Length: 165
Image (cartoon, rainbow, N blue to C red; front, side, top):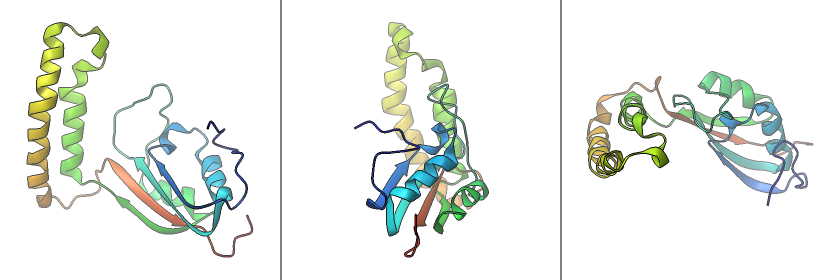
């Protein structure tokens, strides 16, 4: 099924639950998308969104935004009751992911154009160094309570029980 995301063919009040993960940053008209999500949700329904806050530019040229809890609150507060907006990762996890994507894999962006040696290095890094770094990060993440630097946010919203649209 292919739908125009700002004006789908779904009837009003079709879905009780909506999940949208890592989509908003790719939509230039984010409020139009949120309005459409609101339209197709049943009254009293819930929606879960995840969005990036700190991440490299990807899916170029269709990567438009990064979000903070404050911008997310503004985007959703007009149409929905906000149940939760919170970071999914702390600063240690964020720095770990940025290190892996930027430093370790920064030179391997164009995998099709890699030499045989680079392909071997990529595989060795991917299957040995990255798991080690991730395990180490999980072990030390408890020492950071800083969630101001995070990779992603989760947003859970509820459509009013008595909503007309």
